[in-house]
Length: 410
Ligand SMILES: Cc1cc2nc3c(=O)[nH]c(=O)nc-3n(C[C@H](O)[C@H](O)[C@H](O)COP(=O)(O)OP(=O)(O)OC[C@H]3O[C@@H](n4cnc5c(N)ncnc54)[C@H](O)[C@@H]3O)c2cc1C
Ligand code: SF4
View 1 (cartoon, rainbow, N blue to C red):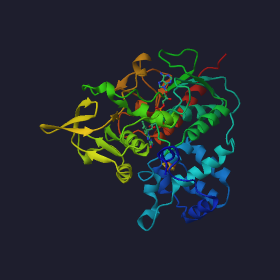
View 2 (view 1 turned 180 degrees about the vertical axis):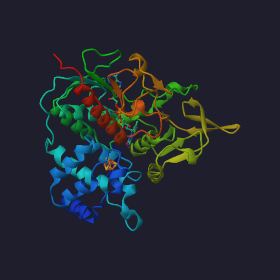
View 3 (view 1 turned 120 degrees about the vertical axis):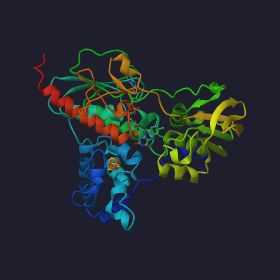
View 4 (view 1 turned 180 degrees about the horizontal axis):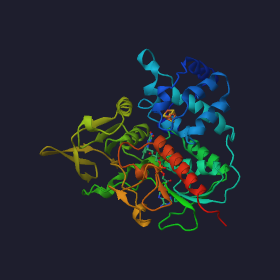
């Protein structure tokens, strides 16, 4: 297959009506279902699957969206092996129910037809600002709009969707899927102000939700670093302007997390004949999900463990292992070594924990009336889209409760 096509197409095809029906009918519809407990947004999974089995696809989408407004993205990007599908009782005897694929089937049905499941409640005249239009911001904005609050989302990029739009490779999530979620939230009456980077406290709002994600990729501080491509910018180019993606025969990717795996996948599928991932620790210490690691190995990506990059040269990446150095041939070097802490915290005077915004269980920050969620608060554990969506929901609920006790507005 042509390499550009392999890069631009979504990896898994949609389920046909028949396939969805057959899969839905395999479900045991467990009482107190373990899959629902394992989903961070607690979607009533047996219920949405049951509705697919009775051809009530719109009703199924409603069940999903009631718990998770970012259901179309989550259906594609959730590490289902670790979450809902990993908890399916059928795992012990046969294959688990393909919950993610069924969720995608129901969500695509309503997004493709622009069917609006929810509408805004009568206006409360309360005003809430959301900073950042990624999964956390969209989820919070949508939940607040459903309750009748006037929400304005400030987004520094031209398009909403955050990393779903700019950072998750097309193979897993095409851009229109992320944008369909933004449009659905906009149709709920949420106002989007794009191209505006908030850098100081906002005034005139009853509450603020900070959902800015993380910052850029940190520097490695090695000679020749200016030759290295930033991993997030590399993925963004592959999504937004794939024709402009120019890579050499040999590519080295520094890092071994999920972003590094994605960069290696893009490089392979863009035609690089040899892609080497370079990691300073051991295989066991990689932060990538095991299924992602297996996937990229099948893509033909090679690994250099316990290898520390020391310099970038025109034809390759010089690395050190123990006391000797060696060269990995590479015309293109990409770094994917994580993102920096959220830079907005100090601008808004918010307390932090190891650089992440500090919040209470209801996601309020150290400044009353300012809440935060998503990657910018995730000091511990792996950050994910579904957790960001759940944060948005929790914060929206807390804001709604707090607004209800405020004295009447003007
Ligand atoms: C390459 C990559 C692959 C990933 N793959 C997966 C995956 O397969 N599965 C999964 O579950 N998760 C994945 N993730 C993680 C997932 O994308 C994030 O956890 C999720 O997007 C976090 O949502 P968020 O809303 O907190 O932040 P983001 O998605 O980062 O959105 C933040 C938004 O805020 C905007 N913003 C920032 N600062 C300002 C400001 N000052 N003013 C206005 N706007 C601002 C940004 O432009 C952005 O649009 C991946 C991440 C990366 C980097
Ligand atoms: S949101 Fe993610 S974890 Fe939850 S049911 Fe859907 S695919 Fe599974």
